[in-house]
Length: 162
Image 1: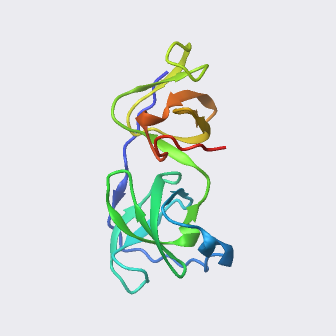
Image 2 (image 1 turned 90 degrees about the vertical axis):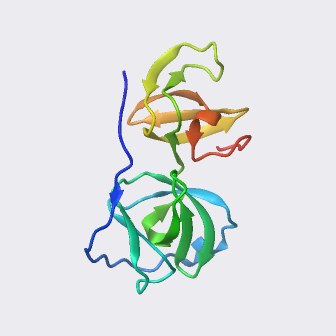
């Protein structure tokens, strides 16, 4: 089975009112990975609603790297390397990753000789867990298997994720 999907972003002129982020979200040390929790999330040029929106992400679950914190705002980098600011409550700590580069095999064991369960095309997003020794458990809407972490954007080489 193969999945395909593209990064869907662009500009929009719609209003979005969101509550403040919880205080404990301020304690996290950067950089760290998160994912977009909202169906629509604006990236802005600065940490405030008075800054212009540079992108409108319409892809819930898209992984982002949080590289800065200012009050309830997070400076993020997306898989394409675009940087900007998002409100913290548009993000979740739920770990996701995106297939980067070529198509990947989802295997039944964390080794290259493992049996292929599924295949995923570049741009496919899934939840990750159990990352260790260069492999992550990658779940795309219930279809899952182990993927080498080097083929995923949203996890650092050598990072352990539980």
